View 1: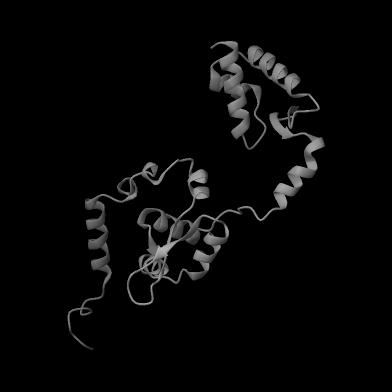
View 2: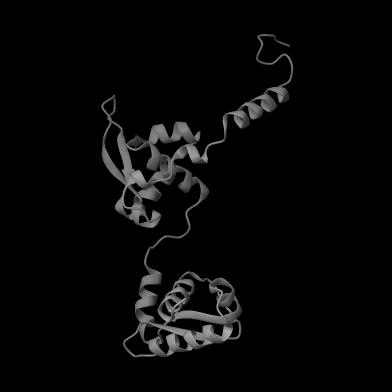
Length: 198
């Protein structure tokens, strides 16, 4: 691995790390000696130690970590206090997945697929700018139809909906579905569903 390749690899790991990364972990991931890793980390830290840089590479007790520069604290605080995404609930993620794969889709259609009322979840997803109104249904009442937004594509790391993973990859195989149906049938008490009354 060249010096430039190693530096790039270290930067990439640091960028996605949630906790400080020890030199031993860098060495294991890159298959490079710890001495060489330390040399590159120190050089990277020195290059970031500049008043016009927004980040610093710091070394603490448990490893190396990227941190924002103290001089930029006001901007970081403003960003953190914006109404930016808190983690979405399971209900919101399920609803968002339905909209993504079935769009354009109405609230009633999403509710039918999920089996629960989704009005509140749809409002939340609209507020977060993950979905938006894309038209009206032709039928009675002309229900609002929803689709995903550019922000959704950005968060997914894709450029268009064609890049979504095929839904078939996330569905159980036919034999699994059959065995689940059989298991469910065997749990229904005898006499129910066959027209008999007690």
